[in-house]
Length: 390
Image (cartoon, rainbow, N blue to C red; front, side):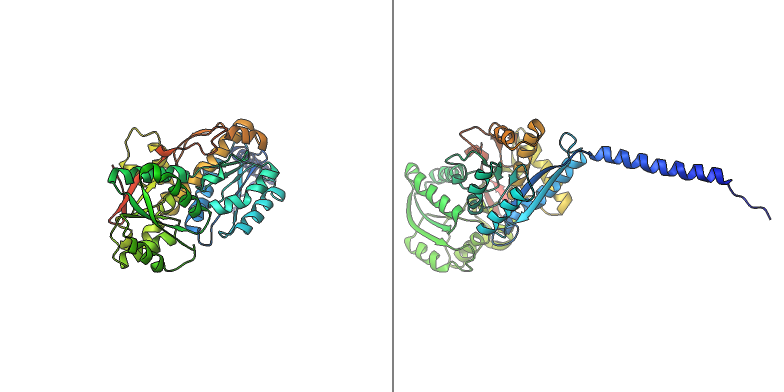
């Protein structure tokens, strides 16, 4: 009987060769992945609670973008590590999360949170710690007056209201009612409407409010209906605005319903159903990217983000995820230029230029948002989808 076997020496050489190959492959993988210390960035979003339609796509976008950046070698060879916390749409929990990021996680910058109120609640903490924060919320009082360490990517309510006033003037709608959510975002929007209406020769003849957890707004809307306005402006984020659209339809209120940019995602259409049809609001170009000019500077960036998000999560990208996309890229671009120094990152953010999802950013020392009225287009919901108003 013949036995076919390798001499022991040959077997040993073969084993050692395979082991060496494994080491080489491991080292190659480590080099490709980047073996430098990670750059640690914090993120706080309103992932649960009333503002979850904002925070959920923001979290998902950041995870997607983090993976893409690391797949390309990170930032100057340093892996990007984003630590994400949920503040449950609560201001106290937001402050606690921000403190944990600064004191325990030792982050060099923070992106988020999702709402004006949660952002303002955390403002004093980041200012005292001298850690740059790039908010995803809209209220103008986040950045005006300027706070040295705070920036934001969502288009401001000042610009949104200006866009709405342009629409009212064009349609000769002069008598309006306002219904706003009782929080920092709603209060800021209501204030801007009051400030800008006289210049547009618009009169606010009724003004009501609702809580972000209210489930019925018919009482407020009946008061508005009695005043017979030519249009109703609702300033809030889901789910409240969707309930208002449904309640107005139920009450037979057929005047134009104009929303804020706080409803610029698919969730509003899902919640409002048929009552969403006809609703008008200012929004970034992402919702109508296929209708904007082929020469628009944002078009390619918007199409890429929309396709990547759809491929990753099997649902549409939306405006709020875009705010987080812009916030993280602003921080990453600054890190790439100046490294993990919060003071230098802050200085770099203050002069940042970025063609993003929310608009074409041009930050300055006096403007920590860097977007104007031209970051918006007017959108109308028709047959359950967004249409660019021209």
